[in-house]
Image (cartoon, rainbow, N blue to C red):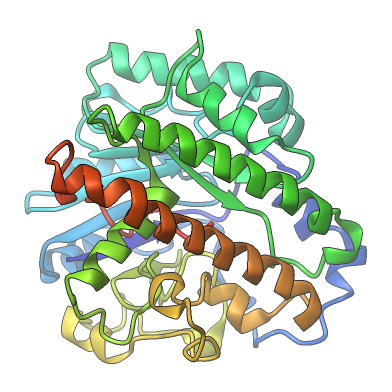
Length: 384
């Protein structure tokens, strides 16, 4: 199985603090010392026929298609047309800011297995980072798709940075009067821009890790009751620990997000890249679905891996955390240590909890190893 994130457009209807604002902050842009050659000719929207993307997917073995942007639902008509013409096995998902979910037809969205919705916690928090009224619109649209018969997974996708109180916001999403999410993923805004000196990451990361520990205690409390909540970073790390314990071959332990080995992205011009945030990085172009037939076997030969981390004691689980940030290296070596050490501490904590508290529950048949399985590579990066 291969997952393809289809960047159907490069436009967005929001300007979030950790995305649009940083991308256009001249102080931050001017700090880049170097950057791989960037393709300046990428169209704003897909510029090839729908038949081309259908033919490409049909040629793959058990493909998964994740609509991505920009904000993909700005192109909801094209999404509807693509989905209506898929007459072969293909798993569908979408990663969206959730504000335009009411635009897509019920017939189309109900064919999806997963909706990943960007939301950061309480109304005040989400609106602070994403814009006034965003939270209310997201919740309203989630309720609408459920009312209209959506039976798939809805994953809350949190973006984290200071001053977010991670534990407070995550537990709010799990249980609140508006809509309680059954599945949560989170990703820190860290090492994506050369912004460390303008941030308070060093101090905030300590509070974040305290939140991780508290949330993990809550998670294990539920496990002891026989319930494994889908908190994806916990879920994915524990699954890797189990797989390593079972001597599963990871083929040099590639990134658990799938980037560059089991997950790829298709740009608006048909070019295949290892990851959807690596748009325009010409050095990493892997082919083009318009110009030639590209098989899964050929993509496997072009696997992209993080090489600088392979000697690390945590590499088998972490895999290098993020392909893009390992290539670009926006944070200096001393700055990156704060993030790297945070990742190691999180993995160490989960390994300890697995041995002392989770594995005994498996041995006692309170839960099963299979309870930690999940749909891989569709969006949750696992190493936050």
